[in-house]
Amino acid sequence: MRFLAKAGALLAAIAFFPCLTFAQEVSQQRIITGLGKLTSAAPAIDLEILRQEVVNGGGQPMAALPNWQKISKLPQMVVEINFENDSVAIQPKSYRTLGMLADALHHPNLWAYKFLVVGHSSATGDDKHNLELSDKRAAAIKEILSTTFAVDPQRLYAVGVGEYMPIEGLNADASNNRRVQLINLGVFTQKL
Image 1 (spheres, rainbow, N blue to C red):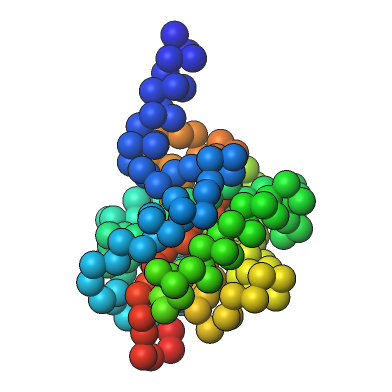
Image 2 (cartoon, one colour):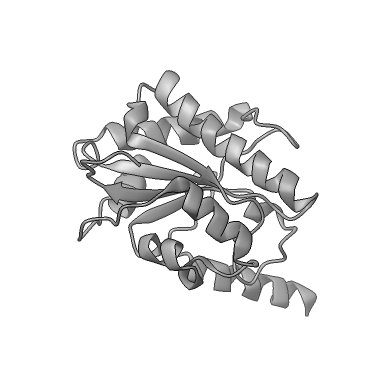
């Protein structure tokens, strides 16, 4: 019975985040298709306002927070990037996923767009530490994409949200909450 409850929670999470995918299921085409469905101009955003809204939002889902709600409808994809425990060091097994992500960002269908890299963490540990760690992990993804994979750093913006936006239906301590989310911000003429 407990297994069925956990399986149901996972299915609910996948239904809530249809773009939720695990590293072995990621493909360049899936990334391009998932992130390339931008149908309108993205709203102007301020990274610090997004961060503060998450902290002050009391664990509400993205769509319940005014500024996050604006970007929650934009094309996005969640990918599993594994980090060393309590560290920003990316585990070697995640480089394949990062490579596919970088290849997709170099694809002509996505080349003109800017992306928000959102780092998430599980709720194990203190919330301030988790927020800082997720912010550093998002920055690490931006750094590796720009230095190792030559994605223009001007196209990437990083923000960490710590444990404040767990996958709905899962325990906040679950390791699946340690994830990276990419959101297509569209083409901007102004700097974030």
